Image 1 (tube, helix red, strand yellow):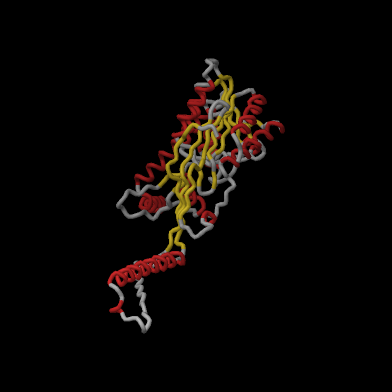
Image 2 (spheres, rainbow, N blue to C red):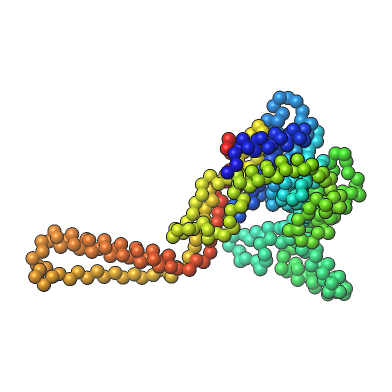
Length: 389
């Protein structure tokens, strides 16, 4: 487990090398306990920026050390504009994964510092399908890629060669029947919104980018890369037109060593096998004070922690009936009438208790031997707190 002192030393070395202030926003992707970029991080980020500015001096440059698989697409603009209120120059350091919403944050930076392992991603959004309570579920996946809808229409026209207007109209009607007009409206809004935000973020870059270059970058990240999970390395990012800076070997070693420190701190290399959480016969596992994300600088540390709860759900027979009859056979020399009433009562109570214990053990064994239906995992009570770990 890494310590804050170790991470502080690495951050200070990077600050000296870069002549900047380092602000880490690290959303862990530990299997079964991952974190996403969300608006609840804005408040602790603001605390760190205030701490940078506590002396009253303006900050020339901030380097945001960023790691995340993505998150809420409305958050990057709020983070980027807040950073610009505190520093003349804003850069982003990408040690490895900076996908989706994290890529959007990077678009708002003057320079994107990427090592050999650094990766960005396309920024095509997905629409979360929410079914109101009490209504039958839709025959749809839980998430719909916004660009998938446009790709469907393109496929019908270009690949299938459908050109007749009435046939095209029928195809669109099928789409509307499946998705419903309100869902299609949400998809159109998301389609327009992501392009608007990307353009606004790129317009923050200093020195300003040419309009033609901005348009090419937005088109490449939203439409021209057809798989959302595609990792964009630094060479491809340069080809797209992004402001990429390759670090020196010395700086890259520092960046990667800091990543390894967070990898240990947030237990990112934990197995993805949920059964590993149940080495014993217990069907419940709880891990309190689990940290899944952190915001850190030389001034402060905020961690997002809660309880990781795992539960094995078994397919148990419906209301199993368990009848226990403990017959007591007395020796021939002892007549029941000769046994005092108090002893008879005590024996009867012991028999009842024994039958209850046997019933409980049998039921426990039935449950233990029942097949596992699924494993439920939840992260409970997550909250940002200031820490000294």
